Length: 143
Image 1 (tube, rainbow, N blue to C red):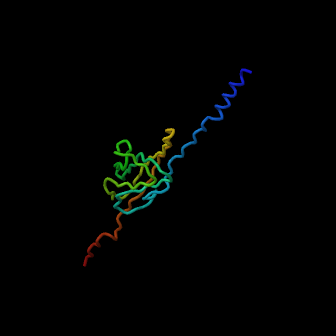
Image 2: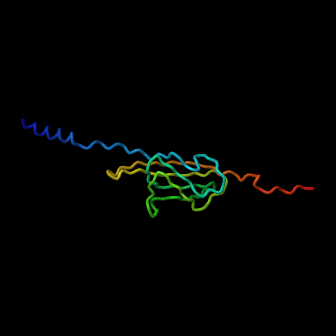
Image 3: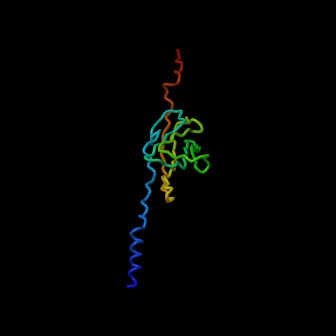
């Protein structure tokens, strides 16, 4: 039988083949401060992002109520990579303008052994509330 050696080699190749790579789970954002849609008082000078596992931070940008973009982290221009499960990011300036702020978040997880990656791109928001009237000095009453 001439086919026997070929079949034996084929069977050996199938049995020793590496298992298929499992799909790499995407990063999971499990917490943030301010939390999504949370109302906070001004000034706000930092945000915190918490992921379920170690994650590569790709980009975090805040869009202010007056449409300015505050880049807190951009992996393309950063001096060093940021990999962790929790990030505390300082804003380039404290924000005080009342209104809705959008937070764009991009993160990834990379398996260096086979160069596979999985990504997360999401958006959260928070609201800076108006300063309470109680904090303003009372107007003089007419006599």
